[in-house]
Every structure is written in C-alpha cells, then in structure tokens.
Image (tube, rainbow, N blue to C red; front, side, top):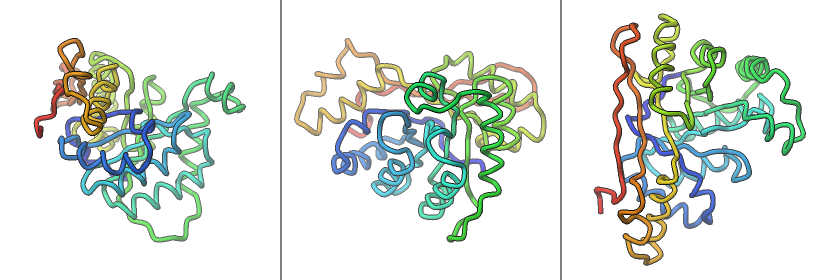
Length: 262
C-alpha cells in the first residue's frame, strides 16, 4: 500500500448521490476546477461506493476519489480487494479506499448482520484482503485508510493501512489524533497520509455549497443558496508538527462560498 497524495483540502459530499449520473458527469469537472484535492463519497443508502468511485473517476482527469467510508459489512474482503485493485489499476494514483465498521444501528438494523467485535472484524478483514486471490492486472501503488476515532482502530490504521480518515469531528480531535499517531513511532510515521491526516467535514454549509453549484447550472441566482445567511462551506487538513512531539498541529482552513474560478 502507498500513502496517497490528497492535497491539503478535501470535500466530503452526499449531494452528488442525489443527482442523476448524467448530471454528475457534467458537474464533476467543475468541482475539479475548484481545486479540491480529493472528493470523498459515503456509503449507506446511496450509490454503491465502488461503482460511485468509478463514475466520479471517469468524469474527471486529476481529481482523487476516496470512499468515505465504504462499509466492510457491505461486501466480503475478497470482493473489496478486487475493487481496490481494479480501480487503482484503471486510475493510477487517484483512488483511495476508505473502510469503516459503520455503526450498530446500520449493521444490526438495516443490514441484518452482527455488530459484535467490530475491531476484530476490521483486523481480520484487512488480513483477508491482503491474502485474497486476484489474477487480473494490478499496480503496486494502492491506498487504504480506515475510519478511526478510537485508539485501537487508530493504531490499526497505522499498522495495517495507510492512515486515518476522521469524520464529523472538531479540529481539536484531529490535532489529538495527529499527536497520537506521531507518538506511536517510526512504523506509524511511514503510514501517515503524506505529512497530513487528511480530514474532511460536512456541516450543513457543505450541502449548501454543492447545492449552490447545482443551482447555478439550473439557472438559479447565486445568492439564492449562498447568500449572507448561509455560512461558507469549509474543509480542513491538520498537519502534525515536524517532530514527534505533541506540539499543537497546524490547521489550514479554506472557506468557500463562491468558488474563485467564477
């Protein structure tokens, strides 16, 4: 596996899943032109995460696409490994497989599976992916990150994957997470997303920003969904301090409401 080059700012959005595929193909190049390093797509009751990633990758030229997060309960390890190899080979350096254990209401309730011991499930799942038989062409450069909030999953994201993908957490939590990763030592440092823990957030303003883009394409006034009453959407990436100390992480925040390209 390889540390992905995601750029400093990423976008997590569910809104594209609510639009027809033909419209998504038309919108993605405009999102790409805004300068986002990576677009992260979820998986729950929307498009299949792997199919969705192929849709977005095929509609763009340089944009990275990450699953944020694909549930390990949705497909077996061999199928996920095949998807990782296939997408990575078709779009080298542009696909990041984000995996997570989801949560009990989704797994037990909607999927009808057993959420017992999710950490052990993830650990065994990654090992099964590593050993899965795959006979089609593949490349060496592949990237896997884990939805990691707690200490055990965070350590696993360093030892068995390429880093952590925090979600719906404040900047302070990410700074703490960065310090913990750095404190784990050399093994973890080699696993960090390129000098950064790449974090995205999706407050209501994210939805407003993408909906505003959609609105423009449908002839709506730019101020109708992105006026003063709507807070700017934002994403942030937190960079660990250069040393392994617990010095405060630096946070780069880019706000956007009306993209600079327009």
